[in-house]
Structure formats: C-alpha cells, structure tokens
Amino acid sequence: MDAKNYVETVLEDVKRRNPGETEFHNAVAEVLHSLTPVFEKRKDLMDAAILERIVEPERAISFRVPWMDDAGKIHVNRGFRVQFNGAIGPYKGGLRFHPSVNQSIIKFLGFEQIFKNSLTGLPMGGGKGGSDFDPKGKSDAEVMRFCQSFMTELYKHIGPDVDVPAGDIGVGGREIGYMYGMYRKLSNSSSQGVLTGKGLTYGGSLGRTPATGYGLLYFTSEMLADKGESFKGKTVAISGSGNVATYAIEKAQQMGAKVVTCSDSSGYIYCKDGVDLQAVKQIKEVERLRIKEYVNRCGGEYFEGCANIWDVKCDVALPCATQNELDLAAAQKLIQNGVKYVVEGANMPCSLDAMKAFQDAGVYFGPAKAANAGGVACSGLEMTQNALRLSWSFEEVDEKLQNIMKNIFKSAKKSAEEYGYKDNLVVGANIAGFMKVATAMMGQGLI
Image (cartoon, rainbow, N blue to C red; front, side, top):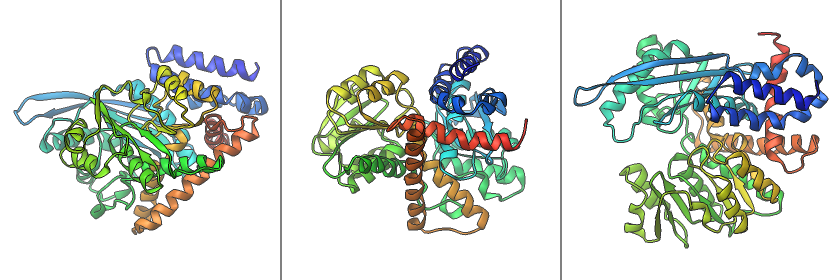
C-alpha cells in the first residue's frame, strides 16, 4: 500500500470507529493528510502501524459528577479525561468546563495536544479533559462543590508522573485551586506537580497566566520577522476576551501594533483607534460583564454576534475565542481585505476549508498546535519548578517561553522545507511534532 492510500485507510477507519465525532474526525484529518510525505520516506512507520496506534487513545475515562446548587437542587454533569499518548512523558492537557463539552471535543483536543506538547521540546504526552458543566452564572460555592465532586473521581487517574491537567475554557485559577485542594485531601499528598495553573502561594508559576497569549505573539513575531516585518504599525484583529485574547492584546500593543477588536459569545467591539485593554480587563475579569459594556464606557462600535468580526480590515488576524469560529466565508472576507498573517490563538479556530483558503491565497498561516503552545509550555515549566521545589522569576519564565516559541517556529519551518512545503507551517508543525512521538513509540516497542 502506498503512503497516500495508507493515510486515507486509517482516516476512514477513524470515522467508522468513532461515528458522529466530527471535531475529532477533522483534527485527525488535518494531521494525517500532512503526514503523507513522511510515510513515503518511512515505510517502517507504516509497518509498525504507528498511525493506527496514535489515533487511538491509550485511555478514555467518562464519569458522572453530581453536585448541589445553592438552593439545594441536585445536578448531574458528565466528566471526561482522555489520556491520548504518553510516549514522551506524563499526559498533559487542560480541563474545559463548558456546555459544549462531549467526548468528540475532548478527543479532538487531546489528539492535538500530543503534537503541541511534542513541539515544545518538553517531556509531556498528550491528554485532555473536562465537563459539560457551565461555571457562568454560578456562585463561588457552587463552583467549589462541582470542582470537589469532579476531583473525587479524577484524582484516581492523575499524578505528577502520570497525568497533569491544567486549565482551559471555563477553568481558571479559582477552579484549579478548588480541585487541587480536594486532590490534596483525597490523596493525603501535597504533590503540587499534579495540576498546573495553581496560585502562586501553592506552587504556581509566575508568567503562567499570560503565557498562551504572550506565546502566540512571540510565535507570530517570528513569522513576521521571517518576512522582514514586525508588529510595529500593524492593525490586528483579535477575537475573544478571555485569558488568551486579553494577553495577546497586551503583548501586541507592547510590540507596537494597534488592536481594533475583541469579542465574547454575545458579540464584538470595533475600535478604530485601538482597544483600551484596561477597560476590557475591568469589564471581563473584574466585573464579569458582557463586552458590549465597553462601548458605554469607552465608545467604539458594538455588533451583536461574532460571525462578522472578520469583516474588519486588518494586517494580522488572531482568532483566540474557540474552535471553528472562523469559517470559509470569513476567510474569504479577510483575504479580500488584504490580511497578510492569520495565526491561531485558540484550539483549531479555523475550519479546514478556511485554512486551505488562506494557504491558497498566500496568507502566512500559523496553526494552533504551534502558535497556541505557550500555555502548555509554561505549564511544563511549572512542573519543572514543582519537581525542583523552587520558583523562577517572571523574567526567567518569560525568557524561557520566548525561546520555546522561537524554537517551535524554527522546527516547523525546517520540517516544512525538508519535505518540500516551504512556508507551510501546518505541514511543518504536524511533521515535527509527529516525528518525536513516533520515534519514541518505535523505541518502546509494541505497547
């Protein structure tokens, strides 16, 4: 069987064995199609069934999470943890609390995490987890009770040398703190390295909060420099107003760019003279209000819904909200308006056809598994600090983060060129991430 047929056979088998899991199918397709040139050179990887093994999680856990609200009513949510591949280190990946969470989404995120973690150069395998619980509108006491219930099952499956969860959408420092407290009680252990994203007083790392947003800008800055440009004077459109978007805005402004948009699930704002970041932080992080409140305080324009945010003319587009937020129609509008760089801050925010449209139009495209890796990279640095029982300064962590993101770019670019795909960072990142994991799997035998 030739390489192309091998890849297509594995992909069809994934679809057959995982019916209805569209998000997972798309993630697998995006990676596998990039790997065809690898198997043209490496028949031994085909003979070892590396693809068949890597698309199947090593372990998938599903469990119920009963909890009681402030009125005394009992609710039952579903919890998930997918430990996808541990060939290069303990499973590592976030926990997402959002109503959309299901097995397909967790598997898609966990599969992506394998290659993202590999690209960081740190010894971390790929995993992901979460629940269909929605923390929005819940009291602190309700969130605490849910997190404690969630951990009563999860703690059986995690540990510093086994699986190290972190935060994701709906899971921030508050939630991590509640879960760590319950883990410590249940395990009779203060193994701080079991969770990352912790508070600074109990093992957290300086620089972890802004790491994903900062890392995105460090990676994008390398892309710009590769074309002889910088952020200075560039107009940037950013979606989202959560952790990634907020710190992407902050670093973009520090680098001399003008950021003109941000959004939440209700709509987006457009500020032609640039977004006032401190106002956004006050509204979203402190008061937890909708982004439309920004216009009442600072001016600008507000638009209901987020579908048209990519109609805004910009040099650089950074989708930082959620998966599949930027479709083909949005991509075509950005291309029409002259966008030069599109870099993913969220996990696979661009649909596959949107991604292809950018590449066909010559837009320099940065995939999430490379550009979004700053958060997990800093989580890996937090694990190292926990293991060494020490704490690095913000400057030390930020310097290490910059170096990691630069190396991810170099690795993706080099792999793309090696296999004849110059400037195709999607192919380059997939191949670079895959080869490290595949080599480890080959070295460890058939397990």
